[in-house]
Amino acid sequence: MAPNYADLEVARGLPPDSCSVADAERYTRRLATGHYENFNVVSWLLPKRLHQHFYNLYAYCRWADDLGDEVSDPKRALELLNWWEEQLHACYAGKPAHPVLVALAGTIRACDIPMEPFADLLVAFRQDQVVKRYETWDAMIGYCRYSANPVGRLVLYLCGYRDEERQRLSDAICTALQLANFWQDVSRDLKIGRIYIPLDALRGHGLEFADIEAQQFNEKYVSLMRDLVARTRRLFAEGLPLAASVSADLRVDIEMFSRGGIAVLDAIERAGYNTLQQRPSIGKAKQAMLFGRALIGRMRTAGPPRDGENDGANTSAAGTNQNMAAHNAATPEAISASYDECKRVARESSSNFYYAFYMLPEPKRRALCALYAYMRLVDDAADEPGDVASKQRGLSRWRGLTDAAYAAETSGHPILSAFADTCSRYSIPARYFHDLISGAEMDLTEPSYATFDRLREYCYRVAGTVGLTCIHVFGFRDPRAPDVAERLGIAFQLTNILRDLRADYEMGRVYLPQEDLENFGVRAADLAGPASPKLIELMEFQADRAWKFYEEGAEIVGMVERDSRGALFVLARTYSSLLAAIEARGFDVFSSRVRLSTAEKFGIIVRAQLGAWSEANVLEKRDRDRRRTGRTIRSRRAG
Image 1 (spheres, rainbow, N blue to C red):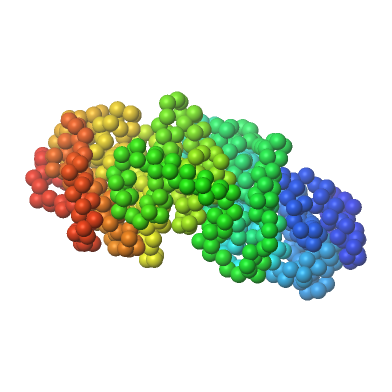
Image 2 (tube, helix red, strand yellow; image 1 turned 180 degrees about the vertical axis):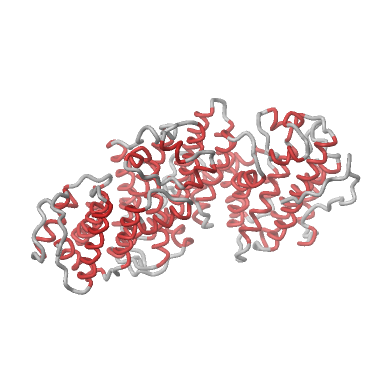
């Protein structure tokens, strides 16, 4: 016997059980087109042959959602959801009764959709009745696997895509959309006793559930929400290649949802991350703009389907990036001019990286210039004059430009056409660039680091990501290469931190971990110099830590393609030579800046050019028998 659900709004105008297919489809069409949803216009862009199928999917999801959310009694909600699953099983047994399942049965047959994604949604709605908070980020992502990801997979099935790669990309977008809504709706969810912010994330920023419940908006909450937004942006970036791997008809819908979710994150940032006391939203004008940009993208890519476009074949991430490049609107002339601009930015920086570029073949050299120019401009956005809020807005702009470049929209800055071309040619994941921006944001809000684990996270974001993007250009096959490259990047950053102790302190930044300062009896003020015995002992400890990362990261030189090894040797040798020079000066980084002479740099480049090096001597030889200043270093393991 069917339970009583007549009080639900969704049941208004519902035909009787076992009605005709025509009556059932008329109801699902009215439900889908008559209920307000953000971006409901996207269904209009699907091929007409799919419209009714889309309405039927929507009706199923809407009923499941309302049975869980519009019923105040959890016990009754669970009973209704169990009944709904019985209706689903009856449908797959060939005996649909409820009008929504009567309509859906035709969609299931026509598109050969398995029952799993429909059933997974019900797992999430049941979970909502009994779980009000999540202990860890992984638990939160696990919830999204049932609450959000099935919807994307259902749409892919509807459009004829069944391969694992597209499903993986869809999962990233759907999870990101779910999370964006969670961060947007914190104040709303609190009213019904739910909190979707993982408790470990709260504690990581010095907060407890009671602080959220009391709606105490402060800098800790800002730091928390900034972190959550950054994580969510990485998921959007991970899924962006999906749009380029599907037909033009579906591409607009995917881009609309992705751009809409990113716009929600932008709105959260513009609101100063205050989602405790208000609900940031995007207006109708913004929705229209997003729709227009997606539609223009469709017009640019109109034409016959690509080979295998609807055959459900597995499409790799590299392939989707190549497809992104194919529908980039920039002309070859514009891309060439953009690379010239990137080269100008890189050349004017006089960076150690720029000299290493000359060891590369021309295509890779141009690509490295594009990456360097992007990173230089992100860094400039964080260091420009103005208050913290204006710098954060500048970094937020670069997040938006990054997402736009991955969607083939490169008009926002002269370097973006080259940047987008490089990322597509070398299949560089967008999440590395979002992590890089997160590192720049840490410089604005975290003047010191309590532990090395936290400092290591910072080093990964501002330097490890550089290594990870570069090895995609250098080329690698060994699956260990990304981890090894990240370690070498961290070694570079630890070297910079030691070299720039005084300058960083004068800017209000203390990068050496507070736990290490306390263990060695060093005050933050001591970092202004001159070097005391305790400070030298601390710096020796940090140098040992850096050398460990160098030793673990040097192996990357032999992992990349042969035509790139010379450039990587130059970088590794240059930075390890800087660390060796710091040690040779007795850790006096205060009287003058430690740097390599032009002759020393030239010698490293000549050595690389002549091939007078091997994987065994990538690093500058360290004087391990150097005389230590002050008392013998205490036994502390450099982690």
